[in-house]
Image (cartoon, rainbow, N blue to C red):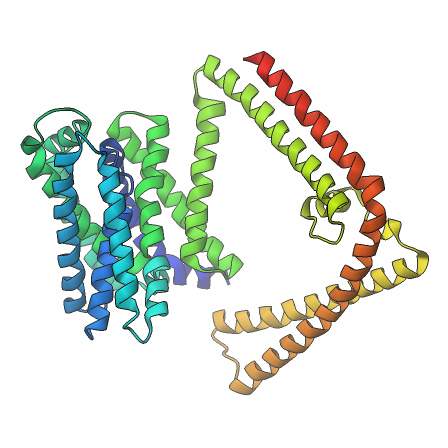
Length: 432
């Protein structure tokens, strides 16, 4: 099983690492230029070009489709280069935001003329990195190697242009290097978005660069750290999507966010200077305690106000302590509640077994017949409906129990949570 997943994920993982390699370098320059959303703007302009190509009857992966996206992205790069001339009076991010909004609106208008517009928009957002081929991967490696070599040779003037974004230096002096940056950036974004999607490309660009910048101000060291973090996040996201059987693009985006949070925690609590580390730990304890107490207080108040509502925090407390709503039921209600919950768990287990059988047949190459698939689908639907019936019973009995439980659990929980939150806030204020 693991060998099959590894073989299937090899090309997507290799593509993600290649994307990380080139986008981290661009991301570090984007952060220096303070134009964080330039990637989203160029990606959306690229998506607009791809959408126009689709409406015109060209496949996105065709030469004509690539030409459309490249032309639109080049126009976007020219506009971003020209916007630097106004940076003295208005922040360049404002122009980038306008470009993104206009490109998005234009994409919606063009998609409205496409019979499969919704599917196209979804593909542009989340991409289809799992479908990358060996030939496409080779093209990415060649293209990005050429762009990387050019940027390496021109790194000094490109970084100088990035470092003078917020000064009053004559913008015309750096216009050529801005144009080189945005045009090459546009080529990379155009190539990446068609495979990885807008959201994932943004993560490849910004998250590894942010992680690298957290630990070093030297661009070479930050680049290496960003590459390691991006490769680790890509691997965890792709393999995690197989384990969860969830969309790869979305899972990888969430994984990148988790890596950024983890890197921030390591920087704040482990690698920071001793004095700063001590302050961060104290602030972290105060903030964490305050959040937990407020959640407990709000959860208790919500039980008092709306006992029939959803109470996830109270449910976690009940699971941890073993004191569930059945403690506040009559003997008959408790018996019915436990029986319905047991039947619901059994139906869910049977559904999971059918699901695992279907998934294993896909991975192991022993495909099910159309009749077997229909039978499994029918059984899953039947078991799901039966489980809903049992869930209705448990929800009804739980609501009745919560109406009694709110005075014995909800009210004390609210009082303890809010009093503890006030005490932590007062202590944190004194510590300042």
